[in-house]
Length: 374
Image 1 (cartoon, helix red, strand yellow):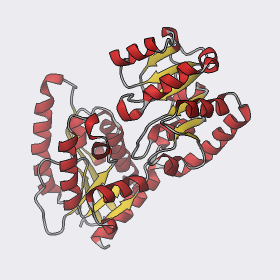
Image 2: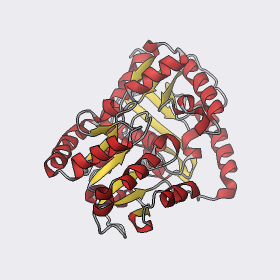
Image 3: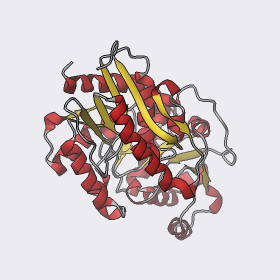
């Protein structure tokens, strides 16, 4: 333990070597920033050759590493250097808590007083193994990580239930800590091009369990939705050939589907202007985008599946993700009913206040203290 501080916490380099952006690297970056002012902890984030944009936003006082250019041909070199440096820094820093940011290929050597923490974000690879080429490998590494860890943080009760059901891990070894979304507050609002008409908003990846095809089928089936609203998709890359073929088959005009991307400020502007936010996913470990929509006063229409009712509570309009008609009805109840839309905006704005990174960090520190018995 350090003088004047009751514990040393180190977040390892794994996710920052493998992501440039992303929900997981944002999670740890926000945790470190929220812990910085706490007088009982000395927290460091390891990103030696730092190519991750979220890590670069962490103050230098609690980040170990230097900005490094994003060069595709040296990605393996960056990961190699980061791994070697991390092993040496762990020996130097002598943390009380090593919080692994993903599921490691090799186990970290144990000191007698070192406690290892792992966060489980979802059980998507176990529940939808055919959707990912690396499902077996990720599942194997995850299982080894949670068995070896002194504490397993789950980001929702639903994720904890799935983890216990699928791995048999001891319930007492786990704790549920929800994420924060206040990083979306106080952003400048950019107005993206091609969004002058009323629109429904979809955010993120669109393949397999994300259930985007259901949105297309519902949209195509409803003349009212097609005539009154465009469908704007933020992030997730360009339309795949399979998606283009489906859009053609469903006879959706090309100018009705608008693809866009950009910084958080662009996304914030879309949330502000959208008539409703659609979240049709079949499975989520938590579900950040609908909470982000609530931050910006956008009514949320969500599938009633996995962790989403737990996280969104009574502040969303729900539908059966396997039923296009139910999705159409849910959208209609919101976008053609100003009173319901305003109610969801009001409920969402109040509900989202509980999801702060400071609260997440405080609960995480309490969990650390529990396994350190301090």
